[in-house]
Length: 435
Image: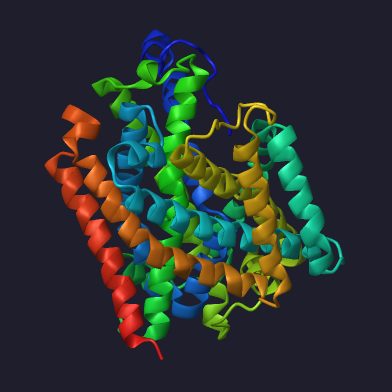
């Protein structure tokens, strides 16, 4: 897991000591920024591209709708980790019935395993754009490389290497300006929500919600905050418990910046695919090649290279986060030693879950599912799993036995429960209209 701050002093003290305002701002950024970047995983990229292709500019309003929802939920998860000194599964294990703990952890593990497998398929599909090797032949080597690096290598090395590849996705931003974009329709699609009650439209809505407000990020955010504390030398639970108002303020800013970063990428992927694919009658994305076509106005024949680099970078960043967050949840639930800073011999079961989740997920790619279609359907699965998990998170965030004086305020509660209600409503509406 990547660590932005390695110092043993508190973040509050470090920020206060820094005189340069720019450096002070970047010192604050950490788990929230990384979580926001990881939200644009291959499943998200595929879903946003499909959204723009299918609905055109009519889905742009989802970017500003989901931003405050993501910001609120991820800050709540960050607060839970900071105040309790534990991840979400650890909190459930200590304060809630086993039935709730095991239901949530099982749902997370299944969803993350599927998501990781689909992302592995997307990486292989992207490599195929660069090198004419059959996609199926790349699945196992990609899986082995990810597991080896995650267990015996350094995830920090992976993050530092491949996060630069994800910058290729910003080509979507430039591509929107090089395409024949109808800016009046863009403005209307951005500011005026369009809602239709048909299964295709609602499937896109549920997929977008499921890939932006997604279960693995809830657990990752809380666990990452705990890892940050451990990196500061607070290895015992009693040392990590509690958070000052200033620390929570910094965490809120960190999460806000991360979620804004994620949503800007989301907005321009939808915009560029709407301006190119949808406007040319291509309303369904069948392959990575189709998704690359949206970059042609900017990059021409290099569009395939840009998309491939972006998807490879995003996938290699996010697969370890998916399997890692599942492993954290299972390890906390069962009381195992855990942590990506632990040596494999000291946390065998934790790393065993990571390896098992990755290899089981890999098998999804051998049952004949198109990688790009699978990305979209994975987002829909997350759209159905997220609402009940959100209910549990909101109950934790209002439990004084867990958070004491740091329980949610009125505004946070309003946005948190509204987010939960919106996600339930979208999922139920899709079920009722499905044909």
